[in-house]
Length: 595
Ligand SMILES: *[C@@H]1O[C@H](CO)[C@@H](O)[C@H](O)[C@H]1NC(C)=O
Ligand SMILES: *[C@@H]1O[C@H](CO)[C@@H](O)[C@H](O)[C@H]1NC(C)=O
Ligand SMILES: *[C@@H]1O[C@H](CO)[C@@H](O)[C@H](O)[C@H]1NC(C)=O
Ligand SMILES: [Zn+2]
Image 1: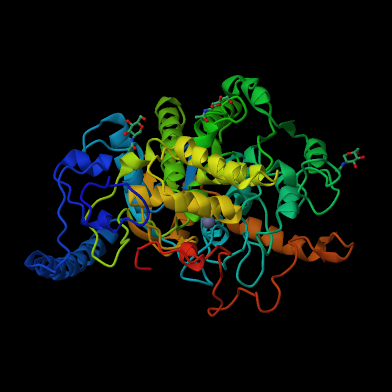
Image 2 (image 1 turned 60 degrees about the vertical axis):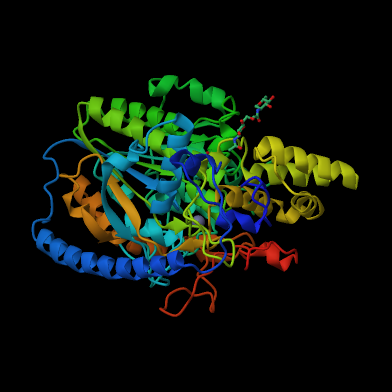
């Protein structure tokens, strides 16, 4: 094997898995100091197999002991007493963040800060448990069923926005909180009409009905207005389709509808700054800062004049909600979502993901600081709806077994997401440049956007010739160089972590739990009557009809899933509509990676 080739040489360098790393520093930098080219199955190989088998046996023993221990503990985890007086609940959702996203981000943070291996993220210091995430229709949930488990404390089918498997609406913790006199807020970085926020303040049979979700969230549904504050993206679902940047199927002006329901509407960074950190915010507030998603943090951090950061939106919301409830005997319920950790997982883009997770960590810091300083009693609970990408910080790229290495250092020089670079190339490509100009454009994107200088000619021309594959190819280039492995472009069934600012008050979430138990905790903590909301919704469900785009009368929760895509049984396997993972193979080039 060519021992002199740089470690991060190119995607077809089968040497990668045989590089030996002699110094701990090299673990993080991707700069090995000693190599060997031993391809034979040596004694060391078989010894490793032995150790592996032993590890499995040992792990099994630990699990058995842990189960006994947990059973013993469970008897002590009886329902915690909510505080007796006024209280605030901040529920944080890290969409698509599995445990490995934390390993990825923690090592990246340590490398970037030159911090020791013991340095933790803020979130690490608040781990209390784990959540099992399956939905009623699949072992692998989507965000709609995942958030319905939080909002309604019930399992439902993938795609369900706070409706049950029998297609009845289920009351949400936010709706019940509003009725009980709490103030309410939703802060996200994706479309405010996307599944997670939608599940708290709307009810539709299929998550794709974002136009209808937009209407419901500003109060055009049986309960009237229930959200006091919304920050996020998704403006295009609020603009009539006669407007320039609309993505609505009809000509309804949902911004006007919101204003008719007394919302104060803002749509840009300057107006956000004019809220003066929240002290000048007037309720109810609708702030939509992007047509669709707010850009990934890795891109946004250079566009701070256009888009607020997640922690900035959270801080403004916290201050405004706290001030508005100062003289009330009820506090507030605020949901804050790191929405696009999930998207970075779908894109298999580790550089985008570490910055999304760090942004979430920063938002959590803001929430913890708020709780420390605010006189009202309160709690932060954080979890994910599911894992995305099947992330492993250790891919097997070759027929030989991989070394135990992955390289966070390879993510540090990336200045942009694969999504952004692909969009820019798509845009450039449509101007019909020459072949040479295309390649130069892509080369430049790889160097300045991904921080990769050891690219191969094939890598460049594959992207230059096929802009539709650019997103996955850019992401794949940086994944390979950092040795980040992904098993899917969709979600996975992995258990996800639960965090809290107060493990004692959140005692019922300590240990391993069903995602619906997180939902139960939320309503119990606030002591609100969600069942009464469900009864009210069911009663009104029968009365209210609406017109669809064609003028046909439909129920207010929109269309039922078609027969065949009905997601109400045990047999339906919901799909994620993603692309095939091993796209490179389909395109025929030999990546030398033993796929
Ligand atoms: C808002 O209210 C005005 C005045 O009542 C009404 O004319 C208009 O149709 C309403 N807009 C929407 C979108 O409902
Ligand atoms: C950041 O934005 C400025 C101005 O828009 C631009 O000149 C600069 O190249 C950008 N930096 C990166 C790393 O993209
Ligand atoms: C990142 O860029 C710097 C400056 O160009 C360079 O010295 C460093 O080696 C690069 N890091 C990686 C991991 O490529
Ligand atoms: Zn997802």
